[in-house]
Image (cartoon, rainbow, N blue to C red; front, side, top):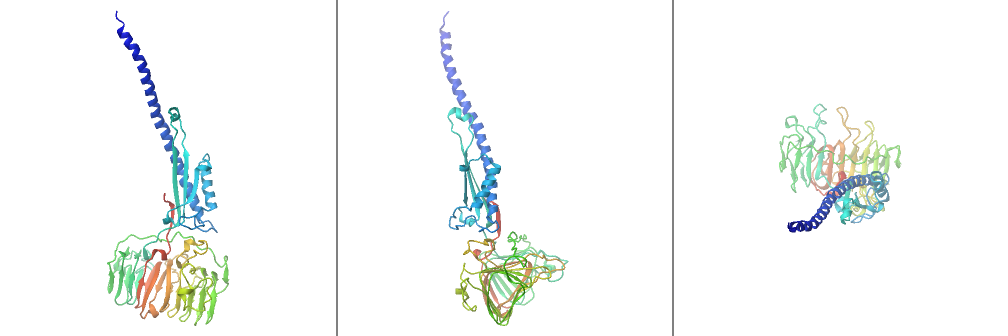
Length: 483
């Protein structure tokens, strides 16, 4: 018998071994891909979750009491190193969620994007994932890296010159029910560079969310902006171009998340323990708490150094011939005639914060004929302290809230023809009344003003031009993960 076939099969045995080894290597590679790859994905998810939590912990620390309220005290572009307390908060969060993570795997920086304005924290994590089967085939493992960025601050404007928050309460007393929420008295001409939002749902049959009780008035918009109202309106003699949008969606208060100002007559720097009355004199005022309010009579002149003025009860009353002006910290001016030079941008600005109870909160009233020249609060020269209040000129506390039996005192801005004010007027629970130039008898006013209020009335026969510049107004607060 021939053994030729047997010899052929003996040779094939070596080939099978080679194929088996190659197949084993292939299976190990597939196993490494599946097992080690899956482990890398799990590791990445754990890093991402922990990094997100750590970034939020760092962002929470941005507005810690007494801090500069920014991620880095070096506000360059990009910002400098993150504050030590922010880094500590990030590391504490990671130690709780990933106690095995080496310190060298953690990088904490202030977000580099200019959009975030030094108010966001970035946490970068990087580690080699565990390598199981891959080592058997010479696979060195996977570097897993994640990035988390959390924001806590103001980064964008609201795009509105006016936001009115009164929702319409049909059972409330007349003039406080939101019918109308925006009243135009007389025959003013108004031009807006930003949009106008009216939350009142009052239907046209009940008076409307917008109304006029005077002669012909004209409202125009530029830059694609318009007037939006939840309810309806009866145009009457009112001309609006472009035509307003009715049935719009109500907006939330864009500044509702601002931290409240806690100073009062029981805390803080008390500048006057009782109502401060100036009668025919000139006086420099310093930021702090004024218990019982401020009153300017006759030709009194009050020159306000930069900072926050807390009016705890009593409000502010500026008489027809009196003057209220903001100046720089070093100015020696004796009147308001050189406002432009005595109150330069960045180095000058005030916030008038009106507060009190239902029985003590007073009216902010600036009389027709008065001189009112104020720049809004801007404390960039002071290590970013109070950043969240930047560009707010007047803030009337939201509390006490309006009810069917209580309405807050109005904020009344008249000031005759001597008005030069800019910034945001924030009165979320009060009506703001702005009169025309020269006490409503005509004139032209160009103002960089934003109103976020409960209701608004514009009166007189003046031409109002309300410019919109995002950088001039308060920024809505934003918080959360952005990357």
